[in-house]
Length: 171
Image (tube, rainbow, N blue to C red; front, side):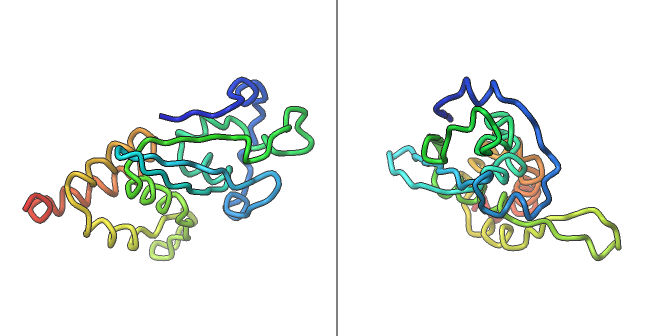
């Protein structure tokens, strides 16, 4: 479940700017503030995460619907009376699951040197290493969460790992 304050104003000012470079989405700036995300698990434990707004929009497609424009904090935007502390995002999830999702989203794309092509790929070796230490229940939760957040590549990565390691996972 997610909630944001000022949903009406967020939806009203809808001017897309998808021309950002990869560095633009990682660098904190007045137009790309760190957004606080409170994650609450089933035991009511709460952990606060921070993520740049543009990274949320570009790497976790679910959030592109929540934040329909990247000019939300731009002084040139007539509705930009916000600061990052005005937003309240609450996610109900296992904390480790959300941390894995955010870690994956924060991975920078790298050029695919093996094929000498200009397409970008994400180096998932660190994430895959973490997946080996996770039980079937948590892997299933990651699959559900990544599907809900529309993170297709991550979903497929976790599903492939799950299938490859099924005998070990269900022991």
